[in-house]
Length: 389
Image (cartoon, rainbow, N blue to C red; front, side):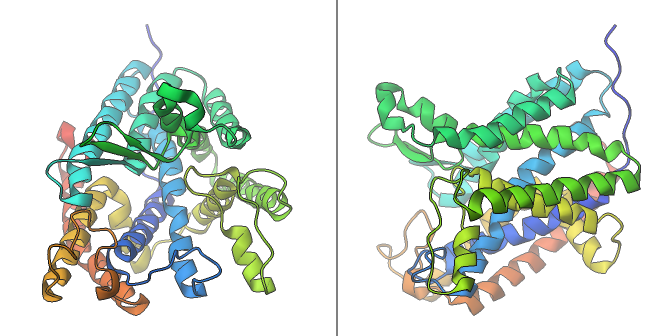
């Protein structure tokens, strides 16, 4: 008879708070994508202002923290299942469901293109595939799952020199695994693999193993988190600061010391480099320590979003894109000016950073109310489908 999984029922509030914060920050990035009138890459140190740089850079924490916490939450939630087989089937079905969402409802929300001519494989794509793989990995001890994850995180940059074009007719396979690229399926359909599987599956696997630390006594857990977080940042400084390893684009010296710092923390996101993950996950893990005993109005505000992240994610895409269309109509943009894809299509008719931030705040306020309703609904209802949204 298969052994039962130890029960774990209490929610970890620090996870909900941090996840809520990163969801709110994530919306800033997408509002900037849809509404900014800036013609420059926000991470271009030769052209972008410091505020524009940080408006983009702060959102770098969202995907790594979300995927990592998804792994930790998987470990914690699977303890509610009676057997590992049940837990594995749940992860498998949820992963498949996320892929379906990404290719349909979420994909349509980004483009409002009923023909789905371009498929964007983004963070939900990466999480879906990672859960499918994790559904098999959970039959191993968590420590082995963690080792598997760390191997991918620390080792994948050794293959940065491998390019999809060298795979010939099989180039899609390498894009799927490790290269952000655009793949033309036929004359009418294409897929943009923004989130290749590696190392994201490793981030979730590492998060799954990290979830075991939540079983420790509070003082011991806090000590472990601080050690891991600080060690990650020390490794980041060592690898990135000296251009030793861990990012395919070495940082270049700038005109001032301050801009040197910006160059160092400007790490590759697509796919995420080792330096990028050490920086973002190190700070995120330390944030879990800071939020461990936090309970106030602000933390409860973020908790609302943190407890219904997928619901929030889908809603915010449709709200932001619809708001852009509304602004475009007010600007009386022609069909030629207003593209189907939506991202950046406002161009010079968009807003400066002040306007972007105001739209972002409005989006968060509007989304708070349906998210709070759905959070309370989940707390008082036990339908099976609630665990999938």
